Image (tube, rainbow, N blue to C red; front, top):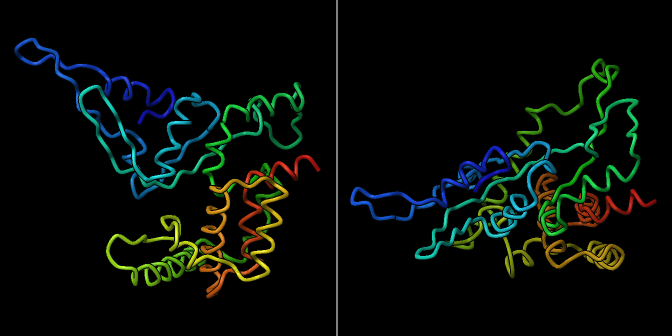
Length: 253
């Protein structure tokens, strides 16, 4: 799968024709693109809105199914693409920074962010606004939890998930992100207070069915990081805070 301008040459080569030695045209076998090359790893896209809308929307399938399907006239190829997508972007095309004010005002940000479709954003579970770092921030004390401590908590949470899904047998999910259907409901359904918060948030923010299930997966992971057996209201609240629907509400306030 090609990624924007840097991957379009790859995308074009996948759809071309080879000339065999006898002179007949033979279709090329599509080659794995960036999404498949990132299988079981990380695909990082910087300046996300600068990629073409067609390329960005082509990410919807692998984010949903963990696969890339390439259909040609006479054959169909499926490549694995269960990657972790990490993307970064400025709030508007002008960039920004400490003390910067966009000359075009809010319209610049609105137009720039509109290049990313709602269905793609609905598949991005954690959406976080990161403030610009000033020179004064660089002399602040180090955070209480360093990278090594955070990595240890992540490793412990992953072990919890391996133990949990190992009881489901062959073909079972390995992580919360892969869980769906009855398995997801069995392992991630929150307590009564969490259910009530999900219900009210779904009504207030028009949360989609996909957004509902993705929120459950994030909340289950947050509970695993806390070492909690049951998903609670606090885990649901934090998972909801990362959704684009909540970001839009905060901007409107």
